[in-house]
Length: 279
DNA sequence: AGACGTACCTGACCGC
DNA sequence: TGCGGTCAGGTACGTC
Image (cartoon, rainbow, N blue to C red; front, side, top):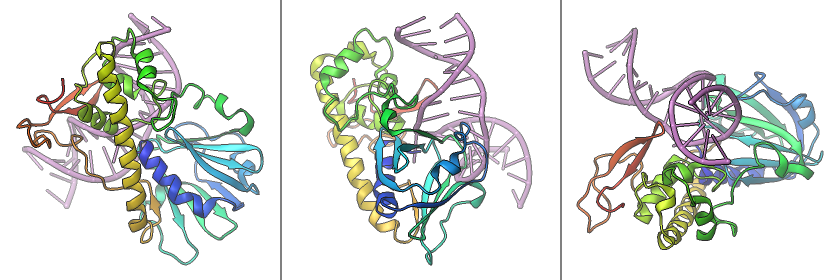
């Protein structure tokens, strides 16, 4: 499920529990998720101290005292849970608890992922950005590298739809199906529009809308975290109202618009948009 | 090189 | 209640 805002929410929830702690014990319950765990995965984690929990795009980055970084991607259904020594057990199916880290503060971090589209890797921290999963990522939507100028450069000559282009992690990193739909709705751009056909002023608007949509979602995640992390240690999902995503044939939320939300399929995935206000 | 389609998995949900 | 079909927010890889 998780796109950038959800991963950021997981990071926010996990970091106070994990940063500064030593991994006393690491266990995996199967040899692979989407990909095989790297060689000697558990041995390389055991005894290391977690210096920092960071994020790049949809990847969690655990900087370790061993000069390696644990890279974790949640795929579609990955969750991290925090199990406190005397607290409740996470309400996930233990059959899909694939990674368990026991920390020096007696908390356990559990990675649960029914679909196993997630994956983990260990890479030298010094060459983190050369790692095969991170090397080709485009700019962070909230960072300085993302601008309408950058989009113009990347969209130039692109016959691909703007929907597909925004999902391309080399162009902008961290967006997924939901937030691309939301950003295009807010910007008033149809998802089918060929990327190269969007003029500079609309690209400027799109840039702002992407930033706003992601920024608001991160904020919403941070606020929901407080409520439910207390009762249940599972991190990764939060309730959020979307303007178009999942609202097929419901009314467009713009007060001056009488349109209904449409759903189309682009490259095998649903796109939601309002035909009356997106052109 | 760029644009597609396909594969990888399980679970939830819907209609019969 | 049970069954089959469909769908799901991810990325990598093969093919044209």
